[in-house]
Structure formats: C-alpha cells, structure tokens
Image 1 (spheres, rainbow, N blue to C red):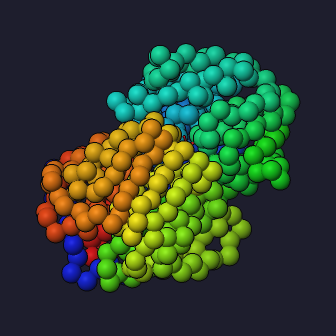
Image 2 (cartoon, protein in one colour):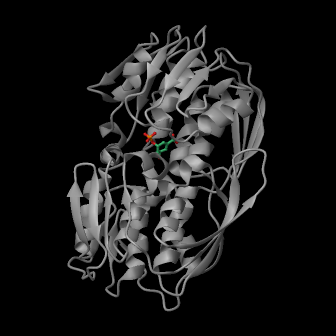
Amino acid sequence: MKTLKGKPAAGLHGELVVPGDKSISHRGIMFGAISEGQTTLTHFLTSADCLSTLNAFKQLGVPIEREGTTVKIQGVGLHGLKASDQPLDMGNSGTTTRLIMGLLAGQPFDSTLIGDASLSKRPMKRVSVPLAQMGAKIDTTDGHLPVTVKGTKLHAVNYQLKVASAQVKSALILAALQAETPSTLIEQLPTRDHTERILTAFGADVQTADDGVTITVQPQPHMTGQTMTVPGDMSSAAFFMVAASLVPGSKITLKDVGLNKTRTGLLEILQQMGGKVTINTTPTDGEPIGDLIIEATDLKPIEIGKEQIPAVIDELPLVALLAAKANGVSKVTGAEELRVKETDRISAIVQEFKKLGIAIEELPDGFVIDGRQPWHVTDTALDAHDDHRIGMVLGVAALLVDTPLTLKGAESVGISYPEFFDDLDQLL
Ligand code: S3P
C-alpha cells in the first residue's frame, strides 16, 4: 500500500524528460529483429511491457543487448527467427501479444504464448480471426491466452477492420509482409501509425492512401537495421500535463515528447478545454517531437465522441480527471474499448472517482462528469486495479485533495513508467 502525496504547497514546477514511448519501443525491437544488420535504439523504454518484447525476441533467437536505455539488436531478417522451446511469456503486454501473433503466424515453426492474469482475460480473437483469413492457424483458449500459433504460409488479404485498433492493424501488417502478393487493410478510423512509419524507415513498402484509412502492404521486403532515438511517451507526459493544468500555481516543461498526430488527442482536448499549453516543436527526420510548457488554469467542460477516441485512447482516464475539475458537465462516448484494456477502465474510473466524491455517471461506452460538484473523500483507500494507467491517474488525483490517500497496487506503474512516482516528486 503506497501513501500518496497530497496537495503541493506551490504547484508543480520544473523540467522533465519523460521515458521513451512504449508503442515505439516495442516496435523498435520487433522490426529491428526482422531486419538485417544492427538496429540501435536509444531512450528505449525499460518498463515491464517493453522488456516482455525484448525477452520474447531473445527467446526467438535474436541477439539483443541492453545497457540502460540503449538497446542493440542484431537483426536476423524476416526468415531468421528460431522456434522457442519454452512458451513465450507476454507478461501484461497486449501490444507484444497481438503484434507477435501476426509475425509468428507466417513463420515455419510453432509457438505458444502465455501471459499474466489480466492479459489472459483480454480478447485475442480480434487478431486470430482476421489472421485466419490469411491462412493462419491459431488456437486460442476460448478467445484468450494461452494461444498456440502453428506457423504456416500466409496469403494476402483485403480486410476491413472490425475494431479501431492499432494492435490489430499492426498484427495484420506483420502477417501481410510474409504473404506473396500485396494486402489491403481498411481501418474504421485512423489509429496510431507507428508500425507504418517505422517499417517504412526500415525499408518496407507500407502505404496509407489519402483517405487515411486504406493501407497497402507490399510483401517480402528486405529491411535494414536503423539507429533510432525513441521519443518521450506522450501517454506518460500526459499525467504531468494534467497535473500541472489542475494544481493551482503550476508551470512545468516536458522535453522531447512524441507529437505524432495519432497520439496527441489529449493535447488537443486540453487546449479545447482552455488549457494553457505552449508547444515548441523540434525538427526531426522521423516521428515528430517537441517541448511542452503547461501552466495551471481554469478549464471548460468538453464532449468527446467516437471519432476522437483513437488519438486519446490511453489518456481517457486523464480526460475524466480534467472533466472532474472543469466548470460544467463533460461527456465521453464511443469509448467501449476501455472495457477491454488492462482492466475495465470505465468501471475502474467510476469506482475510484466515487471514493473521491466526484459526480460521475457510468455509460456503457464512456462517462458523464459534473466538474462543478465539490469533491468530498468518502474512502481514502484507492485501488489501481492492477492497471498502470489507473494507478498513475489516481496518483495525480491525490494532488487535488487535502485528505491523505493510499493506493493499492501502485507497483503496476512499472508496466509503462517505473519511475513515475519519483518523477512526480521531482516536480513537487
Ligand atoms: C497500442 C495500441 C492501443 C493502445 C495500447 C498500445 C499499440 O491499443 O491502447 O496501449 O502500441 O499499438 P489498441 O490498438 O488495442 O487500441
């Protein structure tokens, strides 16, 4: 049980470099592994999830060395992976699991994937069913882990995605690389495009049409290892952006944060709510990055629907917190995907926010929050629900109340941000 820091006397102040992007760190390892030659990643995220990916690829015969946040991968090419004699442990990581399913489906060997209790409850048919249309032979356990992937030859597909999910899209792209003719994938809504960008940087031919949702994948690319600095994770920066916006007197600078448009939903929402944000972009060849300066201010309520969800999917618990301090009623809908994250995040937010006396109403696909109601703590024992992002949002919420609060499961922050509470302390 962790005791959370309460209201700081003078707000949050200072400058912070947040750890590397989780989505990009995963992909850096995976795409480095299936390229030829060395890939060097700097500012790699050394969190539990990304280490699940690193260890899985070591088990698949890829030489990988890590010193701190620098990782060197000796790529074995698209056809150089080796069978693992042990099951591959995906830990808590949905990204590792779903992307690796697409890759392993086309390999000439079988693999078994296992994971922790939370991951073992998450849906895997959203990947195995479309992969089956490409000839993949994947057995799930009632749609969940453990999963057995029987490697086989894959064929191209023309597929319309049923969920707006970058993980599903990426699994299909990795399978399509191993087919013999080009594949076309059509998304419901644009989702994070790191797979498309990074594969292209490594030499693959993955093109998105002007409509933003039609992706064509050319098969059998020869990809070459690259040197890549992983940008700061917008999804981690977001916790401090919200803390600094809400705690009176705050002013902070977040350095070198990834500003890929498919990830900046929270930044735009904060601006629409009247947040004080200055963005100083830095020119780069790869993923866009920049420094963010955030100051505390009063916020207006907001309504968010389906179309806006993918770019803010991981930050919706933070949108709830912004809404809980805005001067009106906010509403989020079209976010039913939150129910199948590391925990049911709609239910977790509603349960934990109610302990703080926040006026929140649960919807099947989102929530309604009246930020005008004063908070009054009714239960000081908060619970992270074994979910890193719920743990961190509650760590930020605690900065807004006078009553001392505790957090059960605070160690779950290690999934994406092991130093979260230390970094927060630095700004207090
Ligand atoms: C991720 C995609 C998102 C996101 C997750 C990381 C990725 O999941 O929630 O944290 O790296 O592709 P979905 O694609 O399932 O929405």
